[in-house]
Structure formats: C-alpha cells, structure tokens
Amino acid sequence: MARITSGVSTSHVPAIGAAIDLGKTESDYWAPMFKGYEWSKQWIKNEKPDVIVLVYNDHASAFSLEMIPTFAIGCGENFEICDEGFGPRPVPVVMGHPELAAHMAQSLILDEFDMTVINEMKVDHGLTVPLSLMFGQPEAWPVKVVPIAVNVVQYPPPTGNRCFNLGKAIRRAVESFDEDLNVQVWGTGGMSHQLQGERAGLINPVFDNAFLDKMVNNPESLATIPHLEYLVEAGSEGIELVMWLIMRGAMGEKVNELHRFYHVPASNTAVGHLIVEPTN
Amino acid sequence: MVDNSAFDDIPGTTVFTATKSREGFQLNQFCMSLMKEENRNRFKKDERAYLDEWKITEAQKQAVLKRDYNEMIANGGNIYFLAKIFATDGKSFQEAASTMTGMSVEEYAQMMLNGGRSPDGVRSIKEGR
Image (cartoon, rainbow over all chains, first blue to last red; front, side, top):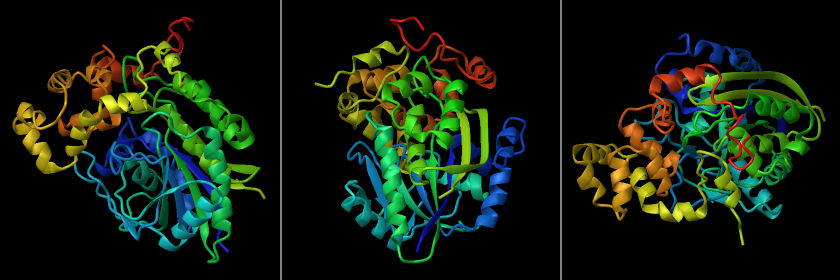
C-alpha cells in the first residue's frame, strides 16, 4: 500500500527560483536563505520519495479569471513549465502520477471534497520553486508529482478548517492505493507577506513563528484562524498559509519535527520551512 | 448578504473579491495575454494600440500606461495578473511593490533587509493599532 512518510512546508517565492536559475545562490543576499535548505536537500536524498502530493497555488498562470477552481487535482502524465512573463523557468518538465492521481480524485470526491479534475495544465513557480529548493538543479526531477492547486488568488480561499480536513482525506486516499509507494505531502506558500498597496512589505515574525510552533503541536488551533486575521496579521498574500494545513492534516494527529527554518527577507516575503513526520 | 466592510478597515490593502474580479476581468485577461512573447512584443511596440484591442476602461488604460499599480488595483487589477506587466518591463516583484508604497526602490529594499514592515499601526484604521 502507498504510505505517507513525511510532510514538507516551504515558501515558494518566485525570486528564489530566479536566484537558482541565475546562479546567485552564493550571493550575500541569498546565501543565508539557501543555507536553511541544505539539511533538507541531504535528507530528501536519503528519503527517496516516489511521489510528492504537492499543494500549491497557481498565480494567474494556468488559471485565468475565466475559471477559478477552489481545489483542483492534476491527473496528467506530465506538466509543462509555463511562461510567467519572462520565459519559462529552465527546469525539467514535471512528471505526474496519473494512476495515483485518478485514484485520489475518485476517493476525494466520494469523500465529499469536490475536486476539479485537470488533465492538462502548465505549472508555475508555486510548484517548481519548492522542487528546486528540495532537489536543486537535476536533469530530471527524481520524483513524480500529483499537483493539488488551491485558489488563494480570488477571495475567499477555502477556510483553514476545510484545508485541514482535505489533508485528512488525502491521507485516506493515498493509504488506500494498492501500489507500494513512498509518498510525501508538501504544503507551500507563505509566510507573512503583502505584495500590494501602501502596506506592501508587511512581515510578522511573531505570527509566523507561532504558526510554525502550532503546525507541530496544535494544528487544530490554526484551522480556526479566520481569513480576516490572516489578512490583518500575515498580509494580503500571507493567506496562502491555509495550504500548509492541507499538509498538516495529511500527517495525522501527532508529528515529529525534523527540521525548521525561518528567514526574512526573500524579496517581499518571510520564508518559512518545516519538515515533519507522522508518529502514528 | 456577505459583508466585506471589515476589509476597508485594513490600511493600504485591497482584497480581491468576486466583485473586484468582475470589475477587473478584462484588465486582468489583458495581463494574461502578456504570457506570450509575441504579445509582449506587440505591447512593447505600441502600448496604447495594444490596450485599445481590449474592452477595458480609459481609467484602466491610463493606469497601465503610467504603471500606476495602486490605480490598477483600485480598478479591479489583481497583483498576480499585474505581475505580467512588470515582468514584461523586466522589473522584479520587489521593484514593483515598492512603487505602491510611496518609498523609493532603495528605501523599500532596505526596509525589507531590516525585517520588513511591522504590522504595528497598520492593522486597523478605526482602532489605530
């Protein structure tokens, strides 16, 4: 049977992708941030996951305002890299796992999570920056990916509680898949940041660090944070943090914290990174 | 009836609701068109002519031509869509964000290096906190 072995959360700032692609990771500005991922890169080499269920948001790349799915699952064979306005990132095509994805789509919908099924889409920095942070610059990604796209662009995103429960349903879906697979669930985006208006540049390390603590010890309390509190305390784009709760929901009740990192700034954003494994 | 009045109490922030999305639909779809190199080149060659191909308001067109991102957002633009404009201009997210704050690019970059903008004082207009 497929097993969920661990969970990773990380910010997915586009400038991080640009720093990797342009060979700037050793610069004074970027070196301290990339240092926080050194342990993670070594760890994942040993873990050798087969599949990542990668929770992210599209940033007006695959989804325009024509259609705005709240939760979508990528069931394609592969996912091309989209051109976000300056040419596609020079990273490998992302390979899907259509059999697991189809199983998950059916399991999730019958479990009352009404997923939008995507057979073809391009993916943007929201999905590729986390892969680059964890795997560096390989010729081909060493894992298959089931993308779970969450709307956080048009208000309202799904509630934290809905995300947390979707995570639990993802666990049930993965664990009922017959093939023996080592599966990780990643939740990406955040932490505090605001990219628009006079309040742009907002960073809230108190909120962020409390969030990291509770991701480990008290996720139920995070699931009740109302959207307004994210907007006020973590900035208008900090609301992406609801996606971390999908990862946490998939871990089960208790987790061991394996790695944690927090860094300000990456461009306009506070970078947070957490690796946990389920204890049960 | 949904009540979004609480959003107006957050200073310097626009929440992209379904209503804003309707208002900015054509503007944001124009931004999406800039994901193709061919369209970026046509836009750069004659911005006004390219904008005139879209059913967007004169106020939206003027905001785009002036690269006034606050004005674009006030007229229904969403930052992730508007990002296609500053990507076309070869500008970073940080440069673009700084133009919305009344700070220079350098002042804004320094604020971020110093840990970013504190939420203290910019949580609520009414409560002054």
